[in-house]
Length: 170
Image 1: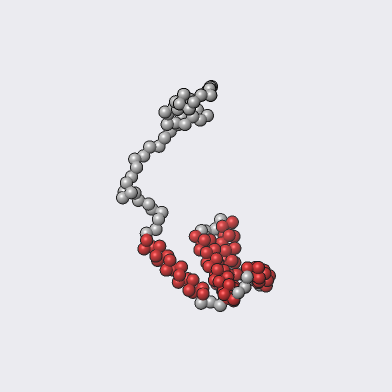
Image 2: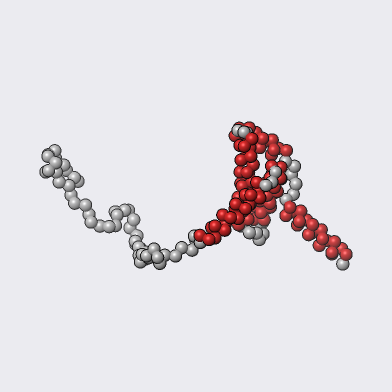
């Protein structure tokens, strides 16, 4: 217990702090510390960072894709967004039934959809449409969408029909 009497600051003494580097805890098990030599920055290699040239190429591809999207009309953008969302649904279905699929397609499609919706919103801002009216128009547009199968499902059905025709002809 620490007892302190009221005195001048010069006569006040406190017990010395323990010089142990291990903090006091309720842990009673074995403490294992992993000690590894520190590398110099010149020796350090980092495999997760892309090289500067590859990031430039990725930027160029992205800019090219944005130019391609901006060249489309708003109706074409809306149609492609619906198609991509259908493809995204098909990917989710493939994942749920544990079929083979490329998991990178999820991010690629979501980013493409986001880019298209960004261009669509930029156009609305140029026309002077505020956020509230934009949301209202989006709700109306979503209600007016006619549900149709995504292109990948159409292609799959055509392939199955061709295989059936080959089997019946043979």
